[in-house]
Image (cartoon, rainbow, N blue to C red; front, side):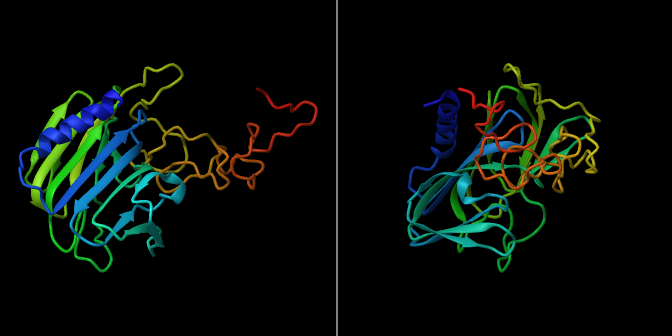
Length: 274
């Protein structure tokens, strides 16, 4: 087990050890934040005595983003808001998927980031918000961020009573008998000291993409790239070259391309490398 994953297991184990009797509904959420402070892997688990579950994935998460699903027998259902739901015919499930913070983040004047887990819109046909469960409450609720060394937690709070625990490279929260849980966390992304990486963007930086700095989650977008509403480059053919720069915008997915997004060939001058 990787050290950061071991930290997560220890952290949530300590947080949730206060209840000796197994609860009916136990929720565990682990965010493995990446050095850029925006991308993450998330592990989401529910354990209960229910016979079915429907879990809502956020808009922008596709089937290809799923890294692990248990049980493997589930139904994939599209939703009107652009998101999807996974339906499980079981009382427990675990998901691991890749994602990116978008509307949840706002860049502050001092260069830090403020994360809000809920943006004020209740679920359709449900009087719930934030992290919620139906028909009852979460009997035990654990939440943690596992952090790379270049991310510094500045402050945090939630809308429900619970116990926070902060450790090096980890921030955890535990509560009992709660529902509609909201978190707000402020943090700073320092330069990633690994060779060839830099995650820190100076306050006031502007990539001239038309998105206000306080809402721009990708403040180093290449000039000419088309972006979404939070300033991140669009890439319709998923070849790694942003729309607006891509001279071959219909490249087949996973094709090898040159710097302009056009397929490499075996013709002279374009011999594939090792």
